[in-house]
Image (cartoon, rainbow, N blue to C red; front, side):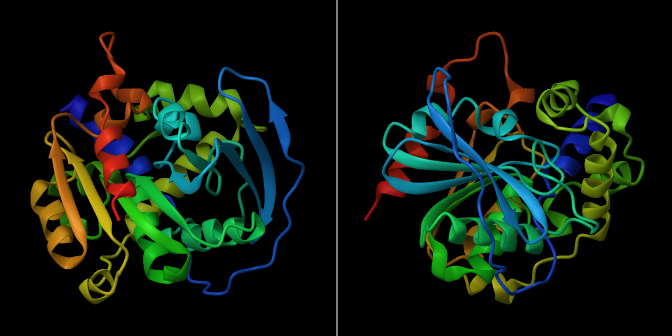
Length: 297
């Protein structure tokens, strides 16, 4: 039961990440782009987006691919293992959403709709007219909202362990969620937040906002899912918290979609930080399958 509680708490964090109902794309300016000297060179910056100082990183060259992390996460906890692989042939734009990592908070609850609007505004500032999107967990639900609310900026979408309905996870998940405590948050995610956040006291704020988002979560109507025109790749693990039945339902609703159920748990297929094992190998990642989908004409 303890393991289920920890996974449920992680999924609470991971299943929430993008927000409110403001359709309008706010004009914003982006800050200084600093060249970072790391094993993989990248540029980073902050953008003034809808009342946030929104942090982003840009790697590589080529067709844009936007990465959207899970709840309670940073760019690195969700995507550190896969960014170098994608950046070999693409311009990777990785973001941190409201209250997560290096991005500031606003005096408002989180919602997948608002997060979608924030990402769209950021891309407008970066003068990126159209991109592919890969969202993991909460970031996958955010990616769905981008495809619904901002279809003109979307080429293809990859939905990693995303949900559209409360029935997409086991019923006991919602009971655990009501009792969610920061004590149950995976230590890897706590440490990652404290490593990069300007104010480590924001950890409790982030956690509370993520939990509240899930408590408030309402099903996305089937009509909105059916209206998605972008080609979609839906991925879950066979030991994921997201049920195979839910992934299949999404696949049936999105006309131009593919479904992959692959061995592993919630995030194993991208090397998400809480899934890493001593025998981790890059060859275990689903990147070749994702790239094949993205490159398909």
